[in-house]
Amino acid sequence: MEPRALPGLKEIEEASREIQGVASRTPLVESPGLSKLAGRRVYLKLECFQPIKVFKIRGAHNKVSRVRQRSVVAASSGNHGIAVSYSARLLGKKCTIVVPETAVKEKVDAIQDFGAEVVRAGRLSGEREAKAREIAAATGADFVHPFDDPDVIAGQGTVGLEISEQLQEFDSVLVPVGGGGLISGVSIALKSRRPGVRVFGVEPQGAPKLSSALAAGRIVRVEDPKSAADGLIPSSLGELTFRACTMHVDGAYTVSEEEIFRATAAMINTARIVAEPSGAAPLAPLLSGSDGVPGEKVVVVVSGGNISRSLLKQVLG
Image 1: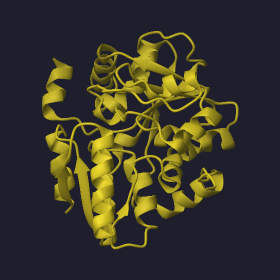
Image 2: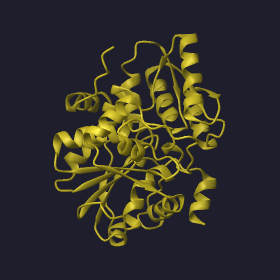
Image 3: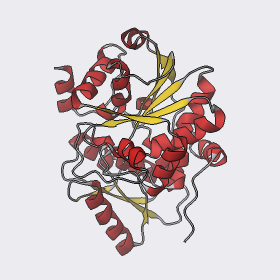
Image 4: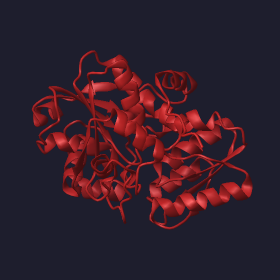
């Protein structure tokens, strides 16, 4: 069987037109306070300003708008499920979202507010994906993968497209890594538009999927991935996202839970941006003084702002 094709710049530009009016063209701004802390100019790509507070609407809507069936099903720790249910409601499609038993209450509430049915299954990504595919097979619904899908990757790539249009000069981009859909799309777009820019992934020490895969030269499955950054704990990259990352990503940083919390607090207290830990994680290497983040102008992709009240109290405390 022929391998699935990765999207290119053409598909990302098509996705940009497809999602227009649904996903926002989010701000890209310098944070003077974070620049002072990091000792270089830090720019924030504020995906937490999307209508659903997370970048996932880009890939989800680009995919859901193209599927033929009148019903869709997805597996998600929260944000992908919010995005798919939001898009399905706009398009008049029936939607079922399979979430982990440990899903954040606020994210489950948001999914249900958009009219989707919620099914709980297991704790790990593989468990909920298996359940979602079972439901899709039984009902004839289209399964919407959270990251390993060309249309999803193309939709996420519109983040990179916008960065290339909003900032004339920058050296590096730091992107949070869950299953790799966002960094795959961003890196494809940026390497097409700005080949000299370097793209780095940031992931929790408890779920080092990208760094392990780059070191091994193959997909590596992390057993029992853990982090408060719940959007960054799939157990592995996908086949497409691994291929995209090996072709276009310059490296990866792993950060501790303490560093993620410190970055989240800095985002809130210094930049006055409410980001969830998954969205703040890319700031962590800059605050910890990690060697190897090159350049004097660095873009941090703040992927989402759906933080629970209990976690917000913990971060600020």
